[in-house]
Image (cartoon, rainbow, N blue to C red):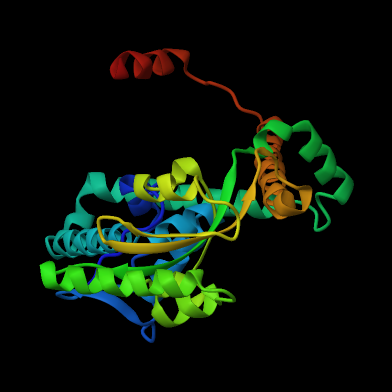
Length: 302
């Protein structure tokens, strides 16, 4: 399988990815993305994980197939270990059963608290959103951004294959610079990076810090509408078009409205859940009945 080097660094890695892929079962009709023995990773499982990420993180991971493939392989390994543990009766060990019980109680409690602390349907209002936007201006300040499109030609294999890829990239670059060239159509027909090719080569908005060194050097010297390349990277050749540049500053309100809405609703829910817990303690009372026993617990865990 060809490994395409993306335009950006790998920003979602390791434990954070694995921790998010917690569901262990998928629908029988779900498409299997990868298999190792009896263990499988399904399309639905991967999509559920990707939905837990914010949009920029999804874009970075979607562009970095090597990281995504490693994620899938690690998930298969996790499932193999789980199957082995279950086969050895590990879930019947008292200490494991106790931790499972605690985890189950935690899930039930969090789920119930989420239901009783659900924000009102209309929260936040437009006025509340705009007030939060103004009060947190620094959180929405971004560096200079570059809107890029590319045609990617993979260059793997021996010298002959790489030379052939170089000729193809040179031809694409020549066509992209021709008067009246349709870069999007060219990317759809010639690019070997399927995801961006389907969008006319569009890679969205990227900061300099998010680009790999070879791409950054070429892009920062361009003017909007200009084409650069072929640019050689570890995986192949990139013919790049700078669509637009956005100067540093605060993101427009309309661009952050929904993200800000989600943040405010999450904060409302967290605050309401804490208040609900306090109300329960106040309503039912909470007394330490045996201070000596409490002191004994503290001494035992020191």
